Length: 254
Image 1: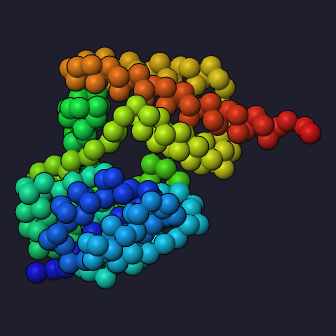
Image 2 (image 1 turned 60 degrees about the horizontal axis):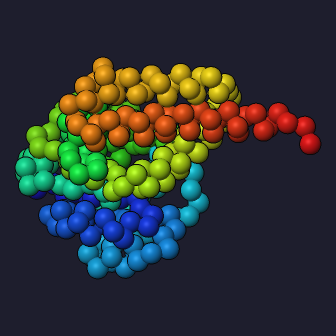
């Protein structure tokens, strides 16, 4: 049976990490790369016999994931986040998949937000490549919304089962995550020479709400669907506003 390493990048995930690691008891090794936790994330990881490393030179999600993957020693890498849980069905599917030859396997995430699973709103199905042979695929260097690059053109297949994604605990939690992502996105776009206007931020936010709540049937997700559409449209506005402020300030003469 080929071996498998579960790989995580973390920071201050003490509340969610235990349940994630419990769902990974079947893997050959767990790699945890911490970017500077101030809670007991590291102690929790060590309590689950994970191999724990630290790198606080944050250059974005893509770079950090690839750094973490480089510590793995198994035949396969399963990239997972602390707010995700492997279901028994997905565990069985992964064990079967790694015996079928080299491929990049996509996993369907199912998000839990504000008290219910979100099955519409453009958030489900949510197929993401997370299982791949070590050294035969790699993450790009984008700061946010990183992609797994299949540079060897391996077959891309889909696994049975779902990966449970406990996305937002509260409105405050969503706002904190959104602020971090907005900053990373703006830095990435600014580095690429992109600019924007505040009117564009407004239009993108409005389009996000309509897309999620109307066109992608977010209204079928009840009150949570409405709340998500509002919050993520606000997050969209914040991304473009951050970019506007960042690029505008650079042009201000002191």
